[in-house]
Amino acid sequence: MKRGRPRRAVVVLSGHPRTGDRAAQALVRSLTELGVETVYLGVEADPCRIAEAVEAERADAVELCLDGGGVVMLRCLLRELDQLGRRDVSIVVHRMD
Image (cartoon, rainbow, N blue to C red):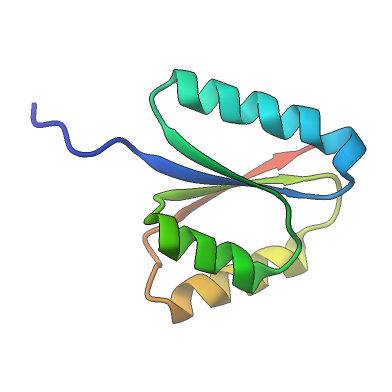
């Protein structure tokens, strides 16, 4: 079986940093241990900046840590990724309620 480059993920925290940062950092560690190259953006609420980071990092996935809501964020992020021609990017939502 041919192995390509390692998967790349951008991890984003969209919510309160006090409650979510530890969970997001734990996610980064878990993904890294599984061999996924990760970039942690920290707290970011702008879908355009998230999409730009995905493009710059040539990421395969966005791991979006939410502490509530998120429907509008997801719609905007999908639109931004589509405009960049990155419909191939997986978006994984992690709820931290």
